[in-house]
Image 1 (tube, rainbow, N blue to C red):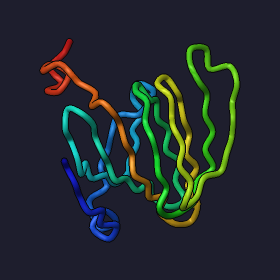
Image 2 (image 1 turned 120 degrees about the horizontal axis):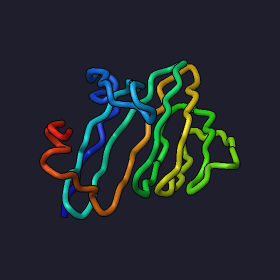
Image 3 (image 1 turned 90 degrees about the vertical axis):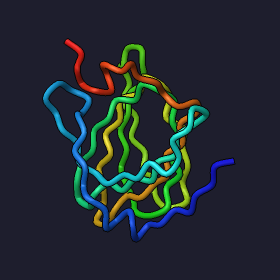
Length: 134
């Protein structure tokens, strides 16, 4: 068994990382610690910064467990992304994001801290991991 202790203070004092966003040329910035990275599953501890917007396209099913903060979450579902749904999530809420969803998180005035669970772990080719694809 893999077990970890989540340390919110360590997460909130960690560096803000930049990731490629859901559209070409976009960038999203937030704090993340990958606390378990096993072929059977990934557990990430994430904090979205206060008073920001994070857009993300999900290519796998993912569970979020909110431990702090509040976000207005607007999403569409594949394959055609026709209908927009908006919900508010806060500490104590849990939800499943299905593969193919596009999600916009509008963060309130404190960090939106959540635990992400992905099972099984997603895999990339060596070229994708090293950004050497053409």
